[in-house]
Length: 219
Image (cartoon, rainbow, N blue to C red; front, side, top):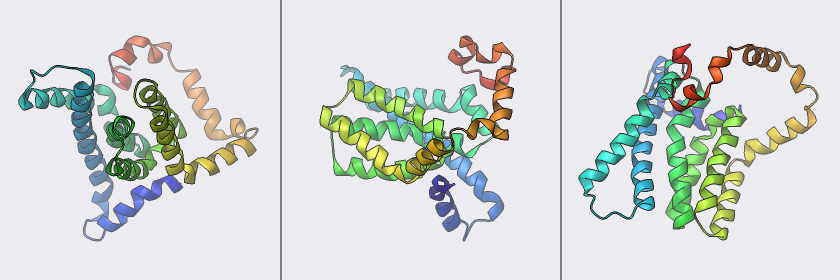
């Protein structure tokens, strides 16, 4: 898949001095650490933007950020992602907080450095979109951000930036979907996955499992 290019190229470079059997695990570990640091940074940024308190010291903000990072890193859904790691969900875990952070910063205070950070992060996060629905979930997050923050020019430019950075896979994906729409429902993978989901116990989809982040561990 073309979106995996931005994972394979760094691994290819690192593979010149790291044994091949360690590369995948190094990637998974890096994504876990990167996601936790991103959650720490995003939590502090969000609370500073959304609150007006001036009584917090640096130590207080660090504690707040640590709480957000711990919640993001050790809830059962996150542990499930790394218990049975799949590339797209591992990449989503690592890069999602940073994508949200840089998008938010672009909406509220446009700078060229923010644009560069958003661009580089978007390309490195592309492996998450091996499953296209991950991208659509990301766009829901972006939609929520632009609903409450930024002027209309910032909102429009953010959407244009995201779609231009992802056009290299969105356009082929869209063309394939339009031209193969009658065939896709008949594919073996599509049928098998739908049968699994349709025949799954209803407890799997209960709201309390979603709200308590218990995931698959309680089956």
